[in-house]
Length: 446
Image (tube, rainbow, N blue to C red; front, side):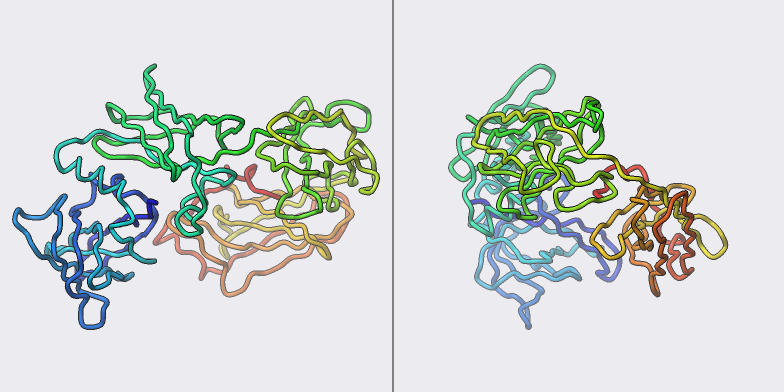
């Protein structure tokens, strides 16, 4: 089984005041940028076990002088946890004075657990610098969780998945092994379109983009799901297509962890995929009316009561096509316009604003635009509470201090205006540029 290597992104500064950012990446992806890399075991971990670490060099790969047998590695500010007597694949940066520096932030990975990386790196050291596309494949798991699932929870990968990479009309293929790991050597760096195929399963995305540098690797995990789909069409009360409506599908018995949402297209059509076998409840606002779908709750095949709903049975692989059904009457809505400003009246262009329904759970979030404005469309017969939750900067997101003022908007019709002044203590624009996130408003989940 392959285990995670923590890629060290090193920012060099005098006096070892380095910043360290630990995020998963395979060692072969860092080969062109990392100053030093070697296999070695720890002879001494320092007086308190936290460095400096004295290594015996078992196998130099990059960045060490010929004949080097031992070397010291100093911890970066976020710490290192090399253990005496254990063997590691060490990725190290260099301080201003040339000493090796390293960090693991959350733990280090032993050399025995990363054979695939070592194999690639040995070839690289011998001059075999063929770019490689690689990753893991797992069944019924989102890509972001595959590393954790396989390496920490010890869940199996999916073997026998055919991986096809395409660039400039040429294709290159590989197959995932018994652990779910795959590699596809490619002849040159660049951007490759990658697809995964397996009988009766479909990948999370129809196609993936892998961009690999010369002589290195790039990694992307792929989730494969039973090819089950539920499709249908939603109509308005007059029998016309109802576009832009969130249709919900819940696994029975009701379980909030398995509530899926699909937005109807211009023709009122919707489709759900990546479904487990079982019985499902289908409808609009099946757990209560919300502003994102201003309709009374309705259930397939167009009934008002949950107990009258017809269960949708999914047994994949295959497509379950349900008959057209009508949504209930549309409810009245209104707009709340929120203006966020600094004490001098300048617009706050990087605020994250939340709108919470009074007396019930409903949360809508929006980002302010270049005018410092955020607009919410909400049900007019409900009251809501508005507050600025955080500010988005080029390199961070910060909560609002010293307190987050809250403004209530009672039920009513017509436009409601809310003006929020943010305390000057929150303005760090002299150190970081404000980040305009308003282009992502349509991606925010109500």
